[in-house]
Image (cartoon, rainbow, N blue to C red; front, side, top):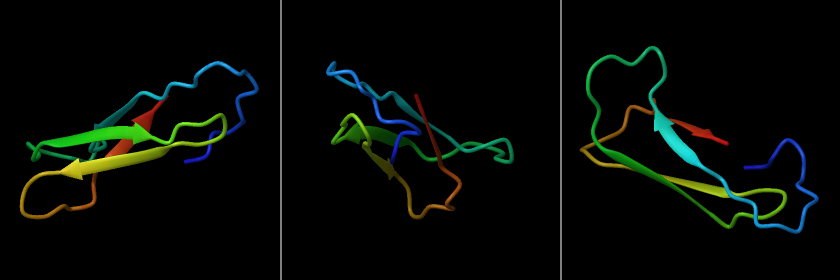
Length: 64
């Protein structure tokens, strides 16, 4: 993902991510995990792994 603006600081950039299923989602969901990698001043990679037999595509990754 690309940030809206590139960070100009030489400090380490940290990205916090979580998973939601939006306001339309009802009931329980299989477990899932999210993590980030390749974090740079201008972008990062986000990975999402859901358990269960299949996914319905409702997972939303929130990040700051």
